[in-house]
Length: 254
Image (cartoon, rainbow, N blue to C red; front, side, top):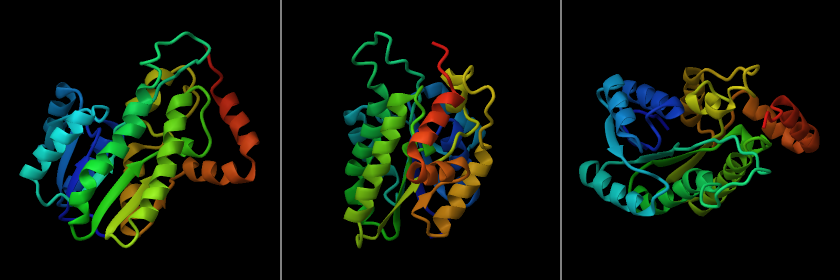
């Protein structure tokens, strides 16, 4: 599948992996639409990539997804690629008291968001020739990072969901790809983990997106660059050893 002359929707496209994907896909002659929750970041993305189309939308809000679907298809009826990239990653110590509504925020954005986006856009995508869904999970789908317990769980769940979706859409004409990045040098990677991750080096975001596009075009269904591939292998060979390594690598400072 050539990622050229496509109409592509990327959730969470205002920074990090999503923004770099938008940049490279625009350069390849695609029509690219990005969503985000922050209008200032959307405006900055538009400034950085003038050809990109921006929509303010929150994937954790089911009603907003319905509204986004209607707006996008009214303006871009040729939409044929959905990239579920929006996500948040938090450093959560579950020993601390936490608001019950807040503790599941990552589930609403990282898991419920992609599930609802797929459900809402699937009828349209099935009507397109050579449609594509890309779910962005993480190497942490295979071995959790204990200081990011809910994030890791959402990515494991998204990996499982993507496998089932691929089976159910077999023969439909819709290709389902999972992109499982390793740690990437983005605001999400540093964010709340500056202290724990200061000794770790993430993959350059440009390199990650190069891997992603090349993998999709080569027909790969699961793209696991760098350390993500190691985590997948070690999750089968020595899961407890790898979990211990992940725990030791980022001992919580809380």
